Image (spheres, rainbow, N blue to C red):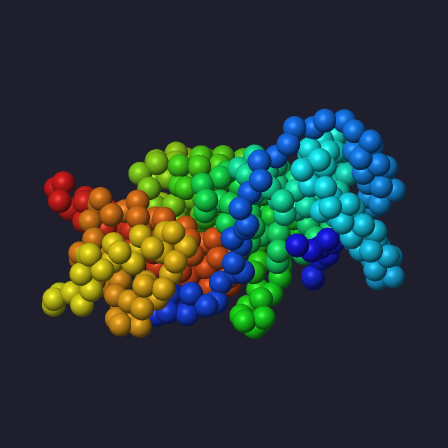
Length: 355
């Protein structure tokens, strides 16, 4: 874990874009086995740690020179080393300091990373979401900030506040070496945050943002809301358009009423339902190997997916879609959109069957 993280400054075929996805995503964020966090018990060691924290923090990395950054990094190492030597006794102290120092957003962010190094409990992850949402993005490297939060969203946690922080920062942008000049920008990062979450969590948050925000934040929120592609999101969009300017309302409504369908394969499918279910189930567990193999086997396998998969398979397909959103790469919007097209095609089959 880095002690100080500073600022750096055509639709694809579903299967064609997934072929490279297994090797082009974010870093593996699996963590060692968690220790149960200790309750805070005042002690001499806690007092000593607090004194070191008092001397070390209270600064904004974005305001420092390179020389000052080097010096501060060494000081931060000392804080981490103290806790690393006595985690059982000092983790409660770290948690208490995070709770007490509400105004030092960089300390809270940095200390929550230290806490997570030793304790990967849900309680700690929720605290990290709070501290990551509260930090000034100018003080950290978003390349490390965003993937952790998207991974937590995929796990089922609510990272709405993190998504809002990303949306409201003037120009959140970074690059991944394996993706060249294509950036992870405001749109991509927003998809990583909101698209990684279960739709039951993301849809109400996006509906609220779409109704209350203006400008690029509203545009991105509406785009994400439309592409949730659920009955609830459709209802929210229809309610929203009554409040939008006519030109924007017409465009949004068109996206909802006329989504791009996947053309079903008319001959015998090349991939059967059992193969899809097996591969998607493993994908939903973070193991993309079998699904990647299917993309190699059949480059336009989405045409089979919309034939053999049914309404009952939609939760699994949505989970797979969330996995690729959580990877937070420049290609995530393409992957997400193509999965959305599959979902909408299967949903339209339900509408036809009802008629």
